[in-house]
Length: 504
Image (cartoon, rainbow, N blue to C red; front, side):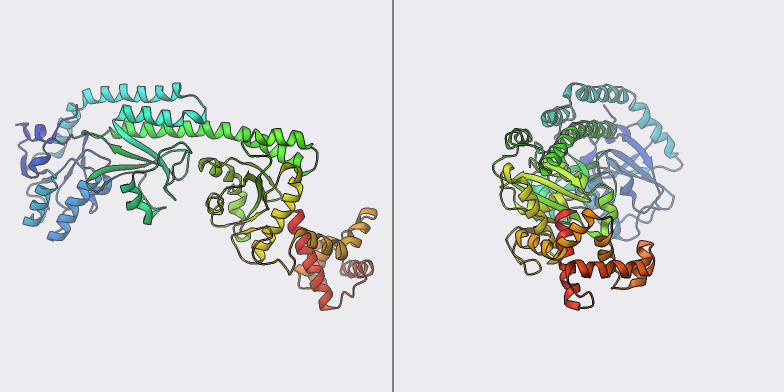
């Protein structure tokens, strides 16, 4: 076992003197660390004897008390101050705080070199190092026997908790929800303490930090390979779990999460292939029912949601925001099948999924349109409904919209009316382009996006100005509309908005 504060103070060759905090003499020392920086506690990982020449000690009583409390909260075992160096007078308030916490306060006699203390701690830790190596080997062996199935996650966490003699929780630092659908939620006292600070649990910005919350030491540490995955450790006894072994435990959990996500990606690819065939009308109803049921979604009662990232944040979407929505849904216990196409994500989920869960999993910068409850025989209609709702959400500046609920879109109540409007205004152009080579729709869209400027449109399309004028006249001939009228431009703009929303 690691040397205690009392055992170190008792070593006669060192001549150390205990100034305060006698109740903490049984604290175990994992390492001896020297620092003269002002925020001494930021270098504590748990169990250290912190040694300073006094430059780290504030001159005022309030600052000294705050230093003692911060060291105690971070998990330091003791504080040792070099005699006859740079420390200001130690105040009575500081001594009392160390006594009450208790934080052992040690005087290092002059001219004893700090390295002599560090050597004593290191020599006493040789047996502890052997124990650490054996425990680390057992931690990695747990990963070997855990299996890659997502069903084995909580079993691995519990076995690690037993090995470390601590309660372990893996949560998302942004919302404090369990990272795995079978994971345990944080204890109430931690949820209450951290809820107002979601997204900034590690207040000092460290990836390994001890806290003292309501009388208990709590460790938070990042899990490698998974952004925002946070391991929370509640030790059940003294001494606390070894810091090095804890880092290996976090690595093991990260590797297991990677194995689980890898298995989910295989299922995600199959879901995408299924939805692509279903939405293109290449599957019969019976086959669609059996294949959708394999993804644990009822083929007779589901919602189809269409998602898009905010246009101003397109780079984040291209970086994978929408690509990870299916994992976020799985993490929150929501079965799904999804397909990303044309920078939009289409997701089939059970009909009883709450809106707030969908919005949480999609992220704040995402807009969502949701169909009416549907069965697989009507999946293509559900897609049209979700796209219509998505267009309505964006037009009305809403984060989420349901089909046939809320404000109308462009004065229309449903995609049937939208389809009729598109067909009436743009149908002749589509028919012409099917029989003749042409870029009339592209030209019309670019012309309207370019503030009806012939020159800007020609530059955008790398075409001659007269070519653009010819194409716009052709559109007028096909539709029978006067392209110089503002009402005509407005109608065509409406029709293009509806067409693009429902077909991209």
